[in-house]
Amino acid sequence: MDRSGISPPSVIHEYHTQGSVSSSGARSMDVIVYLINDSAVPLTVDGLSSTTAQELHRKVIEVLHLPDIAQEVFALWLISPFLEVQLKPKHHPYKVCRQWHDLLARFTNCTLEDIHLDEPSLQLRRNIYFPKSRELQITDGGILRLLYEEAKYNVLEGRYPCDIEDCEVLGGLSCCLELGPYRQETHTPSTLRPQLNSFLPPYLCKKKMGILTAFRNRGNRQACFEETLVNTYKAATENVSSEDGDVVNCREYLKKCHELPYYGCAFFQGEVDKPSQGFLNRNGRKNVSVAINMEGVSVIDRKEKHVLLSLKFFELSWDHTYPDEEEHILWLEFDGDNEGTPVNKLLKIYSKQAELMSGLIEYCIELSQGNDLPSPETIPGISQDSEKRTKLRRQESVVCNRIKNLTTIDYVDDGTEIKRVKPKRAASFFNRQSTHSYASVQPSETHGQS
Image (cartoon, rainbow, N blue to C red; front, side, top):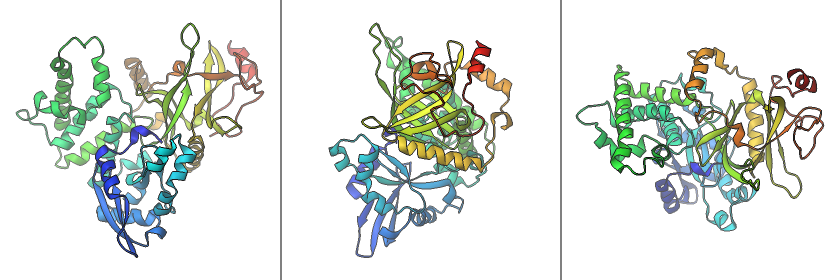
């Protein structure tokens, strides 16, 4: 899925030296299941080749002494720098590992050397099908801690792009969870300086420094981050009065992450066309991460760490194509406008993982139709007025759509050309729509609003 989500170097090294699966006899085999915090759960399993992911998952939960609900919250994943796959309960991890090189050849652009050398590690991660609404009902500290550590990892690695204001709040909560309650004599800017990258995304700190601060000394550049972290650390400590502070802080961290449209997503690699630039109208492609969860699809600029497009399922239609002698393409269709004229927009996402993305979108829609997912109007604490204030205050928020940074094909339902369209289509490109809420733009609508 997303190469930015590779296991930490220490985990990768340990995996290559020990192996996720190693033989220990004719009837039993040693298995290592990694957690997101770099720790490992060693298991000895009889008949591993016929052991399902569900059976292995249950063993891990038992070793970690987690309640039964953890079976629903988490899932087993096979992870490598090139591909991430959540295993279904009926999958046999050993057999999937044996087929790993075939999966890389089918779903990635790896070289033959990369395919030959790559080996996956078995990890326990959040189940992408577990609803966020149920997550905050969990009271077990062990489960919440694992969920927090995975969310924190994704924030620090840039898989969950956040505005600096939100990162500062999350950093303060992390300080409480990692260092204990704030103490003025111990937790000062100077003592937090060596650990700054453990609480705030390193890429964000560098970006905020900018070119204009390059002439200042390093101490001055870092000071603002350290002082802000101390302030949010202190505030997070003061907001927790109960003895069970870790549970409260984990839940607060997760609640903040739930505001991100890509929380709990599976990540895929892809490319999109850049808009034409310069005198020669040069274009090209930019690398993106495509994040898919139970609510929708987000396209994230992997270099700039911000959203290019984020849509709920009821706002889009989709398809996957693989024409002869062309690349795999995931098509996203959504409403937009072209110089004030309502149009349908088509975004092409080039990826050998388009087939996986299309299948996951379809499955998530099927699951969500059986669950009553809350709309923004029904979520406690979120009103239309507060949503408007947020947009006004953060017009450059990393979670805002950046349609102008994308190259799309614009058209109306009868094929009327707003700009040259290739291929020209006389009707909606898709035969699959997520819900009845989405409707293609009709010619009469266009004339009535022009």
